[in-house]
Image (cartoon, rainbow, N blue to C red; front, side):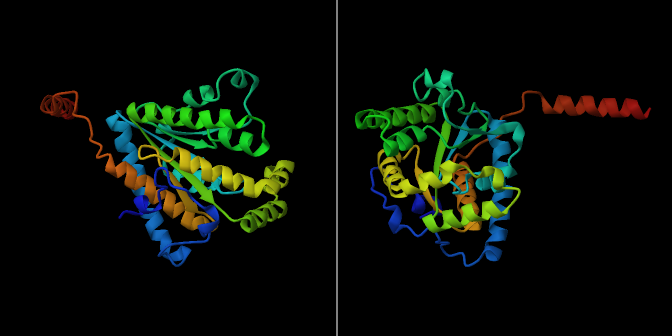
Length: 279
């Protein structure tokens, strides 16, 4: 069984986050041992992106969700930094603007999905609309239940249109989160990230875990799976995400398009031009 299949949340299954060790590193003993594997996968990712862009028939949507300080930005920087920005972009979803809030919750999401040949990484996503309202009781339970169904239908439509969807939950412990918050306080380059909400939301840690568990059970499907990534060790997080994405792109068996010109004729012209230039 591939690493990707082993770590995916099986459709309809109940995940217990407290039963998954966020410090797990699988068979990889240390960061030093893993660096060669990470570098290899990132090089492979760049080549696969080029093929996706050239084929221009399918697209890739990456969904990143995590607790605060869970490593979304780090994953984007260290894994998806290997991508050519000409064919890739990051979309962050914050509190909806007045215009966004005047539409249904998927309106702003659909507009950000990738076109053919492109990769888009969601830093937070449409799942915020079934997580935050549930934890803070701002939306009725019945509405949230309907949103799960709408999300599944939305993702099904994207897949049928040629989009590969991979959804990652970066799983850190509450203690690890606190350590990262404290490190931010001491790092002048990261102090700007600190907010009152970071610490206020810690009081809802267990509630968020249950909300994520329900989201995994209701929305991890064969066509748009969730992956729970042990993320206390940043290097393992990077290794796991890079390997899952590259393996999934490999499985698409993408092909370069056939040339749109007569190659022999073009060679003849170039040869003639080169001969003329010398003469």
